[in-house]
Image (cartoon, rainbow, N blue to C red; front, side, top):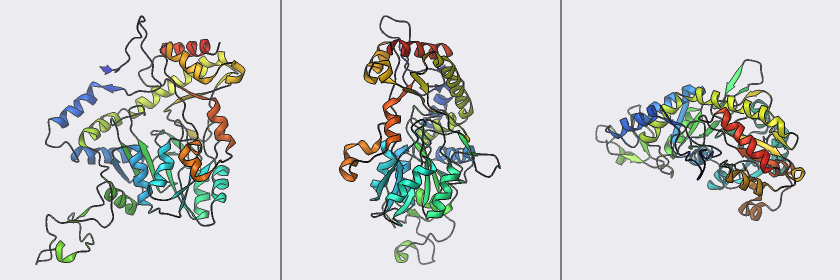
Length: 418
């Protein structure tokens, strides 16, 4: 039986509080984690490799590397590309902080791109314009963000990147299970397959479509990047693995008199971090992965119900525009609200919703407005990101919601807007 988690009724009411997002954990998920607790492995063991294999299969990628969070995944991807001081990385302004911060972790500078005011997505013109603001030849990567579960036009972005000589890393933290057109008519391309990118990064935080509790994944089709990712998540350590000489630098320490690697020996060619995922987290992730399609379909059905129910609040409230050329896997249900026309502030609307037992959130304040980045890069004119931010509001969306929950949210929103 599903375990709906913490949806405690409001005081004096029989209605549960509806957060903007939450996990759906079933008895089989609990059993999977319990089995690991009763096994010989808790940290990096068989559940990690089983999860990575299944995740790669699910998104059509040759390689998948699990790690401790989506933020760790972004940092690993930046390190795997060997970005450094003086390099520039294009990042859309509408995203979570970690997308931009990952470039700074490795010393690279961020070039913020504008986004479409109706979808929040970075398009080809946005990428081209942002890259043109950087010193010639300095852009080494761009991180397009599949926002809310909708996809950016990867084929078009890849054409620009290839012509300009930089790599793409997909921030797919919102979009596991989504597909997009590959640009040549050969059918849908799963997000994470890396047909048009060097790597794709996922978050499996509890509010995402599936969860590891806390965790992340990087996928790639490049074996060299896969090797770098695996090293970086484990302190940068290299060990002999039985598949030939790993290229140890200290031959006098690494090998015995017969030329065999010493069984205890390891080297650290470059510094890494402890970003490993545990068997506990990966057991939950593997169990959840088996339900990915069910969760994606449940969210899509709720989105259709929202779209129909919200017609009564138009034109003050509109769902975000639908991006063409892709099949989304909805992570968030975002509406664009004309708060000026309603005569009420967004803060007051959110407080009113909360008092009615409805959670909401804003995804996101444009990252270029954060104090750290304003001090570093000054004030930037990105009107699309600002227009999206001023109107966006995320409403509850998670698989255990019912149609009645959607109606309740829409009714509460209508009352909050007067």
